[in-house]
Image (cartoon, rainbow, N blue to C red):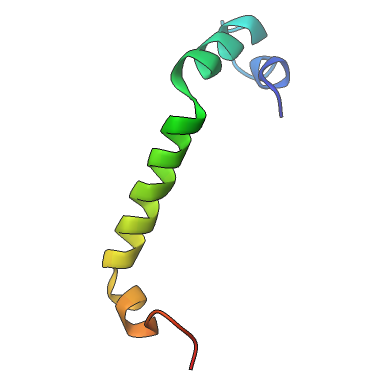
Length: 56
């Protein structure tokens, strides 16, 4: 779903505003940092430690 389609479902917001926010607040660098944060958080979970780092 693109910004214009999403804006049709959000009152008082248009596609240009959504597109601007998306372009202003996201980048490849920020997405990579978010992925790294998620992977690190997942590695801290008990279940991740029980699985180990490779299949047996």
